[in-house]
Length: 262
Image (cartoon, rainbow, N blue to C red; front, side, top):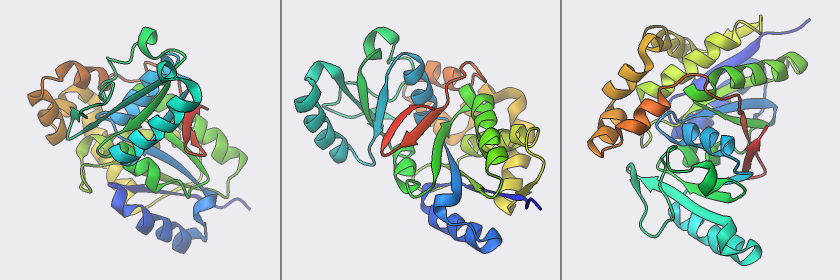
């Protein structure tokens, strides 16, 4: 008899080990038997989907700017400087000495098509680093939320004994509303495709948060703490871009430290 699929949500990357332990307690699952979806709406996972959509074949997420610089040096020696772009942000601002920031608007097809990106951000790439013990790892944002939910549903249907962890990146180890809304939206869509889902308390909380906010995603983003911070930096166009729902069918997947199209 098929058991229910355990669904949990972590609201910031420091919580990830706790949630993985909860999955083991709830249903005996270990990390390698957990499907994980990382969400960082403003802006890492939105940017990742947009970059892959624009023809970038591979993204290397790095937990720190120092790691990104070191990797860039190695890959440029191997593949040529013109093939490698170094991008990222700290506190919402581009990193000095990097080729670009973390805006989904700056990595156009002309700039990024056919080139590899090394990316380091304040929260999103830290979260990706923290979940590498999980079995299959994807990234999602509003821009690809339905495609990601459908992909996860197909995996859970084929392997019903796996659990699901949605890892919200949060803000510097703290809760942020927009990622919780994304988690709740993904769970809501997923529930249309997978019957036997069992939600943790944090998963139910995400569903409740999403229920009201998804009616006007752009308004929610501009009113969020990080949205206000980005707006003060003159990044209103980025926020509006991140508020778009289902503008791409791209589903990014992290495998062996590299993000490619699933």
